[in-house]
Length: 374
Image (cartoon, rainbow, N blue to C red; front, top):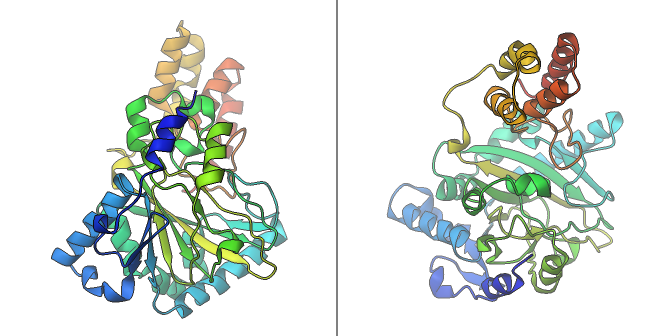
């Protein structure tokens, strides 16, 4: 059962200007920073350290979101990338129905999965000019430290596009309810510290265009991942969320544990395009590179033939194959039965349970891996 009283108490807090002295304003509990006046913070030194510490404190225990106004001082760089993205959308529509959106009904929207790589492959100069933005680097470094990894997905919502349901994001937010409940409470508490959510505004976005709904301070609710689907939680979100207008070239960053969701685009003329940034900590990477596909094939017959209990078999599978389906290519490896595609462990478990032949298992596993990035 959702502890609504705890959520209400947390999200009734107020972010004070004294809490964020480097911000030029606090609007609806979201700190606003003027990039033009903070250029000294882009260099190494006390100014950079102070801004990084302030941004990290917002994500950790403050409102959970901040806006970097005018992060792209030259918005022609954004326009250049927009043109490339629209071409990619048009090309992908010729061969598919466009990328599906998470947490939203189908409608007047388009999604580009892996817009990072697709931008680079379509126009290397545009990629470099776009991702040379130092404010993306500063925000990512502030929360995750160096050696972070950037991914990106474009979302284009046309007039009439419907809102997303309130949710939390990657990692736990992309799991089915039964899956995320298998993770212990301390993992829920630290999950939102492994990634950073961001968005580049590719056009001027009035609130009516459906800018992201945010529930400040909700990232520290102990049940944010397990209970964001609860009707009472979503009702509180609907009554108390905030939205801010954005201008082309602004950057919005927020904790993935913050309850949020894109709004309805009720305008008649704004095609709301955002490039959604999902930045991951380097510490989510394993020590060694393991040939888990080879291991899975090699042990398949032993898993079937040895006299193992169910728990012993599950334990062996857990050491062998990839249990986590990400990272993947969501164009070719779409989610099945939830928000994530099946993992190697899922396939191995199914194959043993259904007594597949070695040939069938090898072929199915190869076909699965062919959908994923090399």
